[in-house]
Length: 241
Image (cartoon, rainbow, N blue to C red; front, side, top):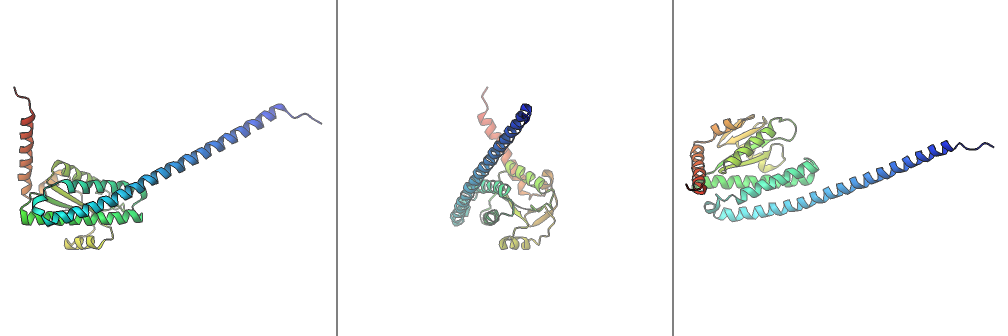
């Protein structure tokens, strides 16, 4: 009977130890991944509930504003709230995917809110002479519009620069009857991105300078008033000599 090689025992022990450690690391990684996924899902679910409340709140605000549109149309609270809802919805779409049923449902509600505010803005223009300029923007998430993201950045920049602009963005492919009606009113064809100012539709990407040029004449007056207001504020806060 031969004695077992001690070195062989050591090698076998090392292999078993490595195997054990590998199993522990794998199990720990799986547990952490599952825990992180659970945490993300919890965050998304909280976001979904917050979005539902925000949408309901915006609908109530529309009802209140429509009763006296001329008095409150210049208020930016509803516009800011809609923008915040859009940002949250974009995050949720990125987390769950654009084809997620809950994302699509909330996106439809958000689009209806935008159409309602667009109608209020036009009503305020016609009945109250409100100094606001609405712009409709149609994009696609179907990877058939490579310049849509860039167009969105340009419009966001202009909206932040000129508070009197009202940008309403819509997913061209969203299956929503009210959106189909809106597209038919302007006789739109799918050549994205599309920017609508007044009754004129502009197909294809437009940079900042191009959009400023196609804005109505009232834009120059509004821009001058804004600049004059900013100059007055600067003079008020500047130290006296």
